Amino acid sequence: MKDELIKKIFPNVKDYTFYEEKYPERELGEGKIVTRFAPSPTGFVHMGSLFSAFVASKAAHDTNGVFFLRIEDTDQKREVENGIENIVRDLNNFDIKIDEGVLSSTEEIGSYGPYIQSKRKEIYESYVARLLKEGLAYPCFLTEEEINTIREEQERNKEEIGIYGKYAKYRDLTDEEILNKINNGEKYVLRLKSPGNINNKVKIKDLIKGELEFPENNLDIVLIKSDGLPTYHFAHAIDDHLMHTTHIIRGDEWLSSLPIHIQLFQVLKFKLPKYAHISPIMIMDGDSKRKLSKRKDKEAAISYYHELGVDKDVIKLYLLTIANSNFEEWYLANPREDINKFKFDFKKVSPSGSLFDMEKLLNISKNYMSYLNKDLFYEKLLEYTKEYDKELYGLIVKYKERTIDFINIERERKKPRKDYSSFSEVRNNIWYMFDELFIKEDKEYVFPIDISKEDVNELLTKYLDNYYNEDDSEEEWFNKMKELAQEFGYATDMKDYKENSNKYKGSIADVSNIIRVVITTKNTTPNLYNIMKILGREELYKRLVIFNN
Image (cartoon, rainbow, N blue to C red; front, side):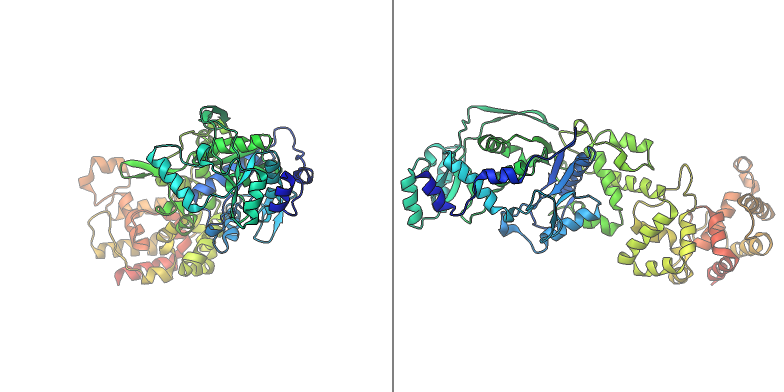
């Protein structure tokens, strides 16, 4: 009768051993691990899911193991158009390398597929058929109305919510009774016949949380829904077994489901993988903390950083500071090293999670941008401005050499300048290097000392006519600036100026800044000597004419 029942439910089901043979154990070397990122195709990758994917990828690749992408689309009501393509694109944009799995909604690589759950329906059927045969699963004919009534009663009685014990109305039907109901067209789901007792304890060592203890699962959870697709709980157990996942790395919102998952692995006689539950990235909301939300927080959206001009490598650096407590120290000591040389360690992951810190992220970005060589910085700036600032893009293409020379001021040295924390900030620091922008921008000249326009004009004219030479070294340039300062009554020695300030109009620093303000409108810029050398005599004269007008 059991075989007849299984044949009725699954007319063409294969024996589960077919899939055991089809997907043999991986030939992994010692210490190599297999991890996965298994999102639902419900939108874009956000900061939280990117964190999980990045950690899973890093953990696998640091052991020369395997990282694969599986799409869990059994809840098809939540699926969005191009959901899979969006996920694949976002991972590619962050150079998260997929060794196996989904490349698009129609393409995949690897020997353990399909990697999209909705395409694995017959696999799940073979394993639930096995459970039916062993008396560990059963068809349940409870209607939605009956389930709602049960829930209301449980809430009133302050009982555990779910189908179990006396509420599992169809748990002990005979095969003949079940067949009659199916033949009568009654709708059903397939439930686990849980062997668990809530008074028993399940113990497990999580790689991040440490030793954990839970009540054993006693719920008859749904394995196969009425539409024929599996639930997440059932599907992920089958998939991680057949794909031979060694380490399941996921958010700790799944901790409450862990007793169910452990029980599924046990009843299916699967080897239990190692679990590592990552705490969510938190954010301050007033005086309290809450989980970073893709619905509430702009910082959760990866597109936010793209628009801001924060490089993808900066995001990965920041995620590593969250992932491993020892990474920051390593990076400070190795700011120019490839982060792939840093080895991820589960023991260094905070079990309580981290507070999102935008200021810290931007500080990491500032350091990162300062260490980029001039050509790479230019290429990244091109990429950003092409999408977000067409005007500046046109100018840095037209004046490529000038742009690169400016970018490189005080850059390629042991302690480089740190002018930018994002590529969106570059315009405000570079616009005055382009005549087209300098002419049209509204300008306000604020000098370091009280000085008339006539005196500014006289000082700068004298400098350009008598002292400026494009071929001067920086030392020669500075000596001429001192001569100019002395000629106009400014102190050339700062110590002397501090002690006898009443004898002078100002100091050599004031003279430099007067010139700086005229040619850039700013009081603070990169090295003035380099700026003047890049602009050249003709451009400097133009700036003086503009100032006088």
